Length: 276
Image 1 (cartoon, rainbow, N blue to C red):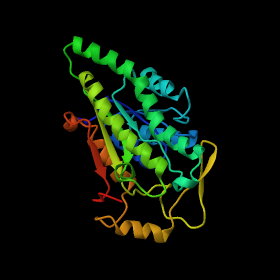
Image 2: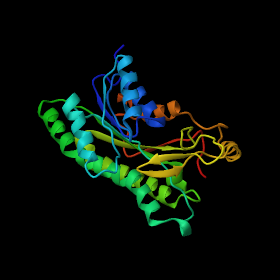
Image 3: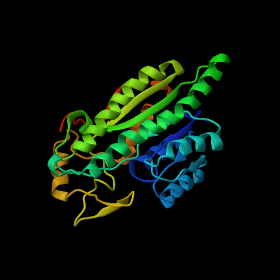
């Protein structure tokens, strides 16, 4: 049986850890050649090696998605290494929470930069490449469908106290999704969004004390108090947080040929949670 994504080239931001890692491994398992991205070299290379060990193809493009030259470097990696570009997953991100009266400009712009500006730059950089490829294919009488999957959140759909910056960015990505679905349809590109609920990652997993992660040179508090985590899980109809592999499967659904006529949509992957 032929793998559903055989020969496709996938760019996945934030794919050295967590949900992004699972997305990279899932798409690679179906034949995609993957450009892996992470802030740090070690986790990116670990995913690359895992894909290669399983018989797939992958390379790393290390760095912050917020760097001014990242988007072009990311797209160029796909073209130079794999001579193509078929799937873009804008997954990288983190949270830096506070109530609005205590939120600093630095917090506001940092979260908008990673969740909204970075995807915009990547898609802007990819457009000329996709346009040229699409023109060649149309002139040859071929129809190739490409996929963009942006990542949003239930916070972007319904709001969440203490997350003005994150909720705003995640609401914005749904607007970007719907707009590009209209702009890029003529190039046979579907543009969709996955909005996650509570998913178990290093940023949300139950933690004692005050753990932090170094993100773009900032020590950001991560983890959720175990009691609060249990309370949050009780609000989910399925009664638990999702796993990174389950989160990856939602993205996968929007990358395979069966979704070729679905565009401009936001898919909730939240265990039945439809509000916060």
